Image (cartoon, rainbow, N blue to C red; front, side):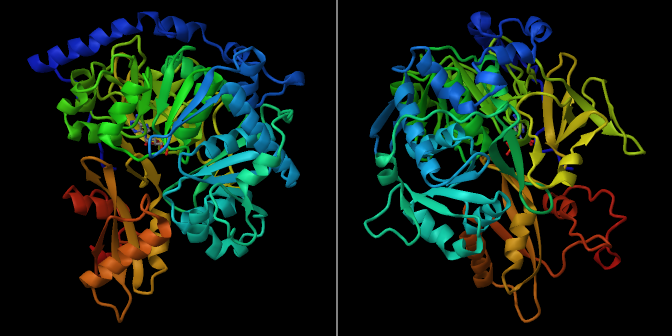
Length: 601
Ligand code: AMP
């Protein structure tokens, strides 16, 4: 294991001054929803959190009901739910009532096309209003929503839709033609494809979504769902094997809602911007469900990152709570403090970050350039919601992920010789970050992968796969991953998926894929490749392989670098030792190589 970020608690005079400024921002937290951490932890119960929601008659619970209908019923239908900013700066506003109406239309379209409870509706869309309408309409219909990242290439899409047994896909004509049509016939479960922006010449066997919505009623009675009914399917990656479909149920909304209140400090008049794409879990839990259940106004930007544009949005939309990610923050830092200072961001009262290690310098930069520290928090696809956070009312320790949410019990654990898991209570001891299962947004399964799911739970702990430390004040510090998955620009990438695609190329005999440090993206994907007989290493072949991977996997997943090797280091059982590739790449000690094949030593 190679630590990707070493915690440091600064103590020099400059650092002390910076610390004071960070501390000062705590003043803003005096009236926070979570004003006294210890007291909130003591008094918290998940039953109370459940009671914040409406529920459906007979003990039912439905995410979309809590996100939309509850507000409309309570007379808040006119409140602005979603302001969409198009790439060309067009604005489109949806009140809670209007969004509910659109979601109802989508649910009626699903019914008309025979899509029922529990059936899977996938989306492959950029951040367009139809994505949010489809997500909420699917949940209203009791069907399961699975959003795919639009920068995926055909292979990751096909793998996920196959595992998830997609019945419906909502996408654009361009994505359809490029990424779906070539293999569509291979997925028998896929019955309906809706296109949100299609030309007059609809591709065969596709449906114009807007025409379908226009014919559908905007009245729909939300289908009764129980708390344990499946609602969302989010894919994540492991070290080996296919992507894993983390199953989330309607009860997750209890955690989405309350963690929004406690960690993001949502108040009714907030204007919230979550910059994450709904193709990843943050963009759904906190880019759709949590803000809407909390009745706030959310801003959605269709465009990709651009520092000046982002500051303009923060200023013009008067964003009060902003949830973003370390890669974006590092890009803002690169764009310079002077640019930030040109914008009046005085409405901004909370800046939070998630998804990858947030360097202490980024927290301090936030204070200096934007007048506030970034509040780091930690969670993962499997946990469904924020688990550890720096709260508005507490000291931010730059470099730390914060303290567990009320209702969450975290620990640092290690494995004993017999495989048993035990907690290490010593301050700053490194071990695996583990959580006591039982919160509402925890995944209920990896779809059809019982063994992989069961492996995550040992001796009453859920093992996160992250290495971390806890200090004497109960703050957690991220150290690195315990496995080989790669985090690049906040996106979790499974090396196996990349290796498999490289291996499909006729020149490739073996491939080993690792993440290597990169200052902005955190890590980038690098592949080591051994060639088949008859192929020789060349710049042209390197480019061809990069192109092959990019075309099939998409730019978010494909390797950025390829290196040729005669042989790759393997265990005696034939497994490529990525750990060793990484140690060699970084010039670090090779560690235990007793299982290495002899000719490789
Ligand atoms: P994902 O399931 O794609 O959301 O990725 C979850 C993983 O991202 C975690 O297991 C961590 O490895 C990493 N991660 C998430 N939040 C943080 C954070 N605040 N600091 C460091 N790593 C993080």
